[in-house]
Length: 309
Length: 309
Image 1 (spheres, each protein chain N blue to C red):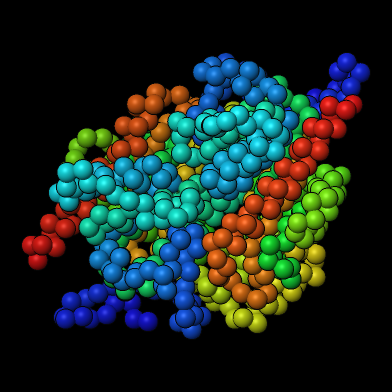
Image 2: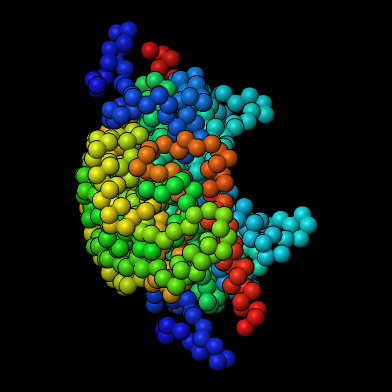
């Protein structure tokens, strides 16, 4: 498949599925979405999608949809946004105009199942020029809590920008490169808003929240405070400014399927100073709204630009 | 800490946290449960827990609670079971009598966060003699769909009974041994019920649902049907009869914390014959109730036995 196709003189960025078996399937059931090609008219439902925002929590993705609807002037009075995946409790999905919002649960395996089905959904729906942004929460390293971090590179536990996928029992290494231009545009949006600190840095993606992130407050801990501080200092020296649990596979899968992708996470605490989330509910809620505000601003700006051109 | 303590002449099985830092914390916030030692009286709320059932889907764990309440004669008229973790959407938790039911989402990282906080919850609540069972769904290998499989060993993608935990950037290998006696007791419960096939076998635990389980229907697939069949045949030869995404870390963490543990999963399809879940909603729903029925029978039997003695 070509990277970009010419269509009416304009360059169109297609979505790839890298799977020769798919075209021979008469039907494709997207099981964890409770959607399918023979039960749903996917092009009619999703053909106009240009932005997909994904995040761990179903509540947050619903609230993002309500927020973006208001921002784009698409929310009527008493507008309600039904969960498109209402028939399952694995993921929640909402749509308003060209913006799709999907929850992905916690951790690499959970977001990976969702992304396989999302990429197929966009492919079956014949979408193009789609931008995908993960809006999430994270632990910061040396940043003021509440700072919004746009990921430059997603790195593993030894600070390498790679994701290891096991296929037929063997490891296959994939690149976790994200779209640099998109990251810069998002940084500019942070400057435009000027409501909170927005920075670009590396993100460490781990398979575990406690031992995997050098926390001292899990059910098990075999290392000292000094060991923890040494590890986080090494991460900092490698450019890591926050830690979360989904960015590596997100970057790898978006790259493989030709989706423009970014990761925007707020830091809920500074891990150099502690492990527990002791901030009040209201403070944490305010922090979690920041990536939404940033990405909302970006989408509004892009839609305005596309109307102009 | 001793493995088992004598208490009034009876042997009591304690729960371990292997973390010297915990005792010096004045407060412990179980963030993903929205519970904490200073905000909740955990011993009063959970001190009587003897059985914990965990499963991926919040809906399924609620329905398990309703089922077990009825089975144990603990459901009054119009009894309702509030979600103990109602303040968060990360996990759902229900309790009826000595039975706690908790959802864990999909994949190793998601269940691992939940287990860290569950183990601390049981420890803070001063519980003892606790049995934990994961009731889940899986893909079978060479089994009739709907068969309930009790895990003998949880193995990785090269069929080894181990779980690799990354700590401070370095891999630490942990055993995934489960309680053999408990597995046999559960198998006997399957025979008692005689409502569906129940077998013991090895379970392969993967980090991915599509490429990681040799499916041909993901967004990406770089191997052939023959490659897939060869890999599944190797798994079968190693005693693997089903594949899921949580058992290895579940087994490893329960073993480290001295919890009696079992994994009971129904197979929703035979992976030798296909990859997609094409069975009707009602058939799949019936299958998913089977592990519940098996574990419900086991709990009833155990509570009856303990009243006798």
